[in-house]
Image 1 (cartoon, rainbow, N blue to C red):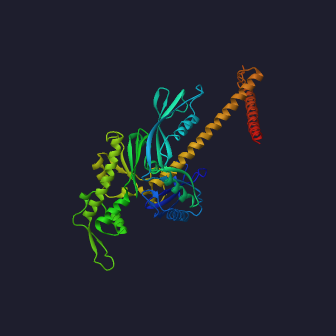
Image 2 (cartoon, helix red, strand yellow):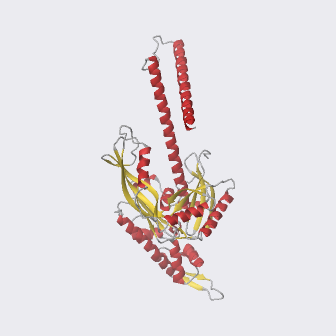
Image 3 (cartoon, rainbow, N blue to C red):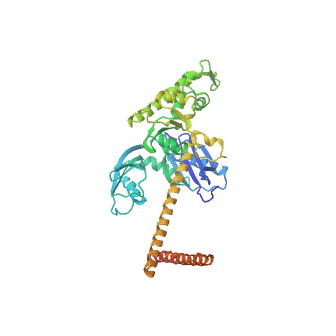
Length: 470
């Protein structure tokens, strides 16, 4: 295991469960799971925190279970998934005109371009959660995916902006902070799930992620490596459970159990003569439930959810010919029997179940490969993406500083010696072993002297900067 890599924790605050998973990438780039805990969720409905006290208790219980799986863990900061009816998205376009046109486009320019989008006018009750660049434009060149290093006067981009209700976001923040944790970032749940269940080929081919959670179904559409669309459908597994409860006259716990154990998403696949016996309440006679009737109730609600998916795909012009990677079903609700067939029948697009084992190292517990943990695993991957980007930026900055000092040192030596090739030694006329050894020693001594001088100058620079600060 790579001990230098940080431990990152994903916290999934869902309608039916709250899960906390701690992980660290190993030397092969795979995710080693170091801790896992979950707890039933009672304070969340449709992805929104409605009871802060109950949510805090559930978060603390999930953390305690996570600590129980690994007592050596210390969790202070988490990445948190966000969903709910209040989530909206919009497309914008932004541009900047660079003052130093001779210099190449840098990360600083891209950061300025992205930061400007946080000034986009949105309703006063909303807050921008994330700004995601789609395609860049440099002068007259379009469809650029990575403009850093290019030359240009005007840099622009198309952006996908995700917004949410301020109060709903505050309730999540308060619940997490009062649980003794700090939020590093809020991540839209379908984007986190996509990171866990997709590979690079999926992003390029064109796929739709359908994350069927307890309170909502989250949609994210990717095409040619670009996030094209996100949406939150206001129905999920809880709605199916409530439909069963009301339609068959059973308790909610019985409805949930029947859905999980005997539920079919396609009624034609259910047997006509199969029945489920439910114990009667307070001495009443047992009740027999037809598996066929149960399947009809489930299919009706699942078909409604999939109709929403079709609607959103048509809205953005992503018909079945463009989604070469098909539809990836994930989340707890994706485990319904024959859901793949119903999805393909309703949408006309190939479908499969997305399991969050694409990036997991071997040795993890089997439960973590279930689709219901895709969001939590994806949150850890999102954290590592941030960490690696920050580290890359620091390394690039370090290289630039060193390169600048080397160039200045060369110029200083050229001026002092009047020799444009002061680092180069002329080859001797005689090619003898003794002369070669002597010249090699001279070159090594010269290089050592140069490096010592450069080191001294770097130390002096930072000393001067510290003195100036003081």
